[in-house]
Length: 137
Image 1 (cartoon, rainbow, N blue to C red):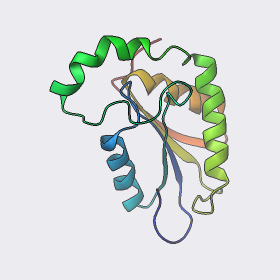
Image 2 (tube, rainbow, N blue to C red):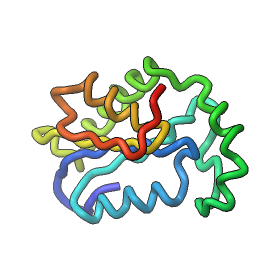
Image 3 (cartoon, rainbow, N blue to C red):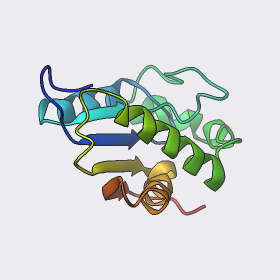
Image 4 (cartoon, rainbow, N blue to C red):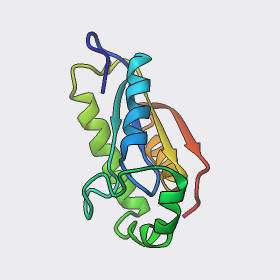
């Protein structure tokens, strides 16, 4: 997602354990409307197509919490870094991304640490990182 013209700073957004779903797509659109080129990823692409859940009201999400935590299976510190490098490279290949400016990254709960791993692995490209209620693992 990006503004219709020009090149803009990139943002890599890691959704929470419930994955890429409408709420995160909406957050990505809002960032794009504010002048950023945004990639909202599906961290579960190895095992599950997005969205794993179609709705985000907590009453619909809570019953899924224990199975979804197990779903993180192949997501490790190493795969987070590998994926981050690939996602940043993909963003850098887009004409809507200003490669002269550093990117930002954000993660939510389970993917909060991915934000920090992304910034540590790519210090020349990542200039800002934000982890919301970051889980530690």
